[in-house]
Image (cartoon, rainbow, N blue to C red; front, side):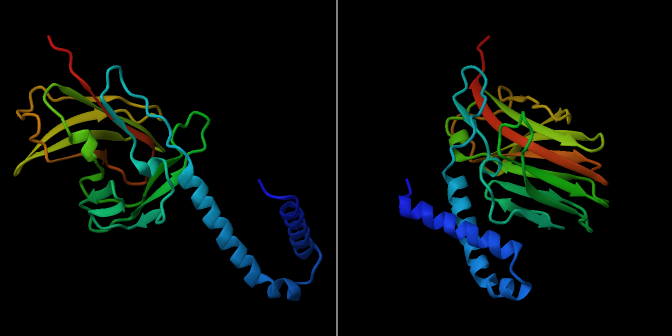
Length: 245
């Protein structure tokens, strides 16, 4: 806790800045700009430390799940908060990349704050699209090693995106499993309605054995995204053993 002298010094400084901003002439304020900028940098650094120290939001996982995860981009503020007209394969964070085949990428991807009463995660991802003449636009989310370790055909992997859009749009989740030189894919459509969707991928018939998966990622694909604003409020991934029949 701050000492009495610290609190008195803080109140004195606050009164000084109130006086400067309210009554002092512009010439005096210009002379104080350097001090104000230094104070702003220190305050911004303190905010970053506070946010970094906050615990991650809880992940709602299905019954008997042995792994659940939310990409950190939905919990922590990024240093680089957005990408404008990104090239295909551009990376927003270590686990999130954007892919497309549009020669004129008139869209942006940025991190945004979730302020809704029902929001669980602190941040979301906003895609603001103007003209788009490509055939696909997707966000790729890399599955961490903890989600791959022990993954077997006895698992059901769930992706739960919470997504909303200004205009109706079709969206798909595609699971990609790399086994040696081959990549197995499973495609599922999910609703874009602002509520969490649950997309389950049953791995029973994918023809691999435990320990063969070297890499996995999920593509969230948006069809005909032109002139739309798509906001991904949250995404969680989890897995659970499939019931033996």
